[in-house]
Each structure stands twice: as structure tokens, then as C-alpha cells.
Length: 395
Image 1 (tube, one colour):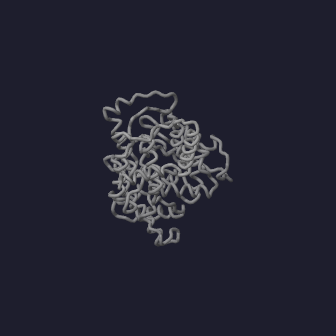
Image 2 (cartoon, rainbow, N blue to C red):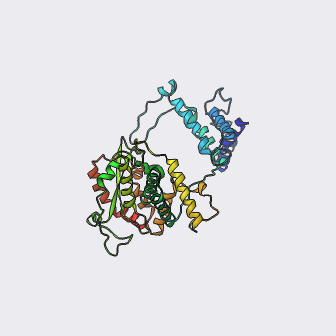
Image 3 (cartoon, rainbow, N blue to C red):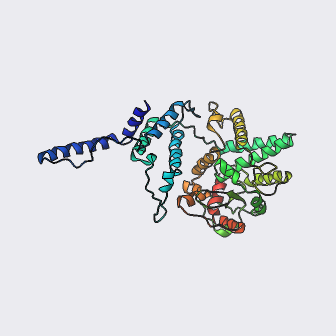
């Protein structure tokens, strides 16, 4: 059954119009060649060699997984979960004696070309993958955005609970989660990127921009000079980690508005985070971590975020009552999508969002960011404040 299913998927991997066109050309050419008693110039159609040279075995493995593996969103697995088998099989081939012998390659520029006999790289396999993807489709539960008012209310609830609790450890956790949510939203970050926040660099630069002044009449489309930017009320956000397309440990800094137009307070939350970490005796390392320096659990942060969103849903009309908060909201994407939605309403386009996460542009350009000292990172962040400050201020 799987062999037949794989064959059918490979057939549908190409447009039926393309196949029909090729078939018509071949038949017309046969008729023309018959007039002059010539054999058409085509490779023989058979017999096919014994053995698997096109990746049929891996295709059957993928189909078996689609039939028997348990899915996360539905009872069945999605195509993206199934296709990882092909990646694993390819790496297995690359590390085999035959694959290692094929490893040499040379190409100018950024591209890398290598001849290979790996079955999973065959044209048939590519057709099969396209056909399988078209047949299976997608059923995703992507995170949804909420209103900025909902995020602001979540932070207000967290602050109230932290002030009222008698449990010191619970208080510290609540303040850290609040700082995390505020950071993700104001900086337009994905959930895991928030854990890149570097405590030592945050402490070293927290005084900068504290007493800044917003010029009268400033708007989200105002053109700001570097001199004006340095005097704006801002907080420096340093991220430290291993980023794609860059070698080693890299540091990225961007300056956010101390307070946004909807009431988010990035500076207040960053100062509170420094205070909480100092009470645990920590002045460097990951900003969202335990007393021993181990990163906090993202699932704990996520659970608390959903808990407070449910409270917003129960007490206000900011989130529809029939929405399943656990299914559609999480720290992974919700704060970032919320920021993007708000930025669009403020007239700020996606290009400025990309500037907020500028290492993504570096990755797309196949380039590498130069390593700087912290003072140079901060100076560079000031140059980008016409984007980063205005973007965060508009939220």
C-alpha cells in the first residue's frame, strides 16, 4: 500500500498539464519518426535496475510514520514532522563511507554544489515530497495576537499579584515573567529570543537614557537625528547568544523607549528585573535565570502568561469569551504578533520590524556581523534609534 501511495504522490508532484504536454510531444515525435523509419531519440523505458536508487525506501518510511505516529495538533502528524525522516536519512548517507567519499566540492561565491548518489536527493524524491505535501496539506495552530491593551492589563495584573504575595520566590518569578512579556512585546521578539538578554550588559547600560526628554510634537513618522536620539528617554537592551549566520558568541543591542504610547514600561520592568536578580546575588549571565545561573523554564513563563490572559478574558471584553487561550496564545509568537499589529495601525511597516531584529537581515544577506566592544554596540544602537525608539514608542 505504501509503495503504491509513494508512486501516486510522485506522479502528482509535477503539474498534470506539464506531464500531458510532455506525453503529447513524445507521441507526436514517434509519429514523425515513423515516416522516415527512425527510432525516436529517447532512453529506453525499461527494464528498471534492481535496487533502490531513488529513495523509495525512505518514502515508505515517511508514509509509515504518517500512518502510525501521534500528532501534536491532530491525532495524525503534519507533513513538516514527517519530512524530517528524509533529512535524517540524508545525513546518515553523508556520514557513511560512500557519502564521506563524495564530500569534496568547490564552488565560487556563497553556493555549495556537490555531486551525490544519495537516493534522498533524487528527482523522484523531490516529486514525491511535493506530491505528499500537496496531499497532506497543513493544519496549524499558530499563535494569535492580542491587543496592546490586553498586554498592558496582563502586566498590571502581574504587578499587583507580585506586590500582594507574601511568598518571596513567587514575587521574584512574577516580576521576571512581567519583564519577559514586556521585553518580547516592546522589542518585537520571539519567545526564545527573550532568553538572550544579558544581565551584565543590561546593568552596565541601565543608567543611559534614564533622564531623556521627548521633544514636543514628536510623531511616529518624525525624522530623528542622532543627537536628538541620544537625548530621548530610552533603555538599552543587550542580547547575547549564538545567532544563525554568525560565528561564535555575538551581542546585539537596541534602544527602546522608556514608556510606550499604550503604557508599556520597558525601563521600569528592566530595572525591576535587575533588582530581583541582585537579590539572588546575580549580576551577570542570563537575565532570566535561577540563582545558580540556569535558564528559567520557558514552559513556566508560558503557563503564567496564559493564566493572566485568561484573567483578562474573564474580566474584560479584550479577548473573546469563546477563544481557547491555551490553544491560541503563547509567549512564542503572541507578543511579537501583537507588536506587529499595533505597529501597522500606527503606520509603521514591516521593514522597520525587520530592523528591530536586524540579525535576521544579516542572515538573509549571508553576511556576518562584526564583533564590537559593548560601548561600540551601544553607539551603533543609538544610530538605529530612529527605527527602534520610534517603533517601540508607537506601541
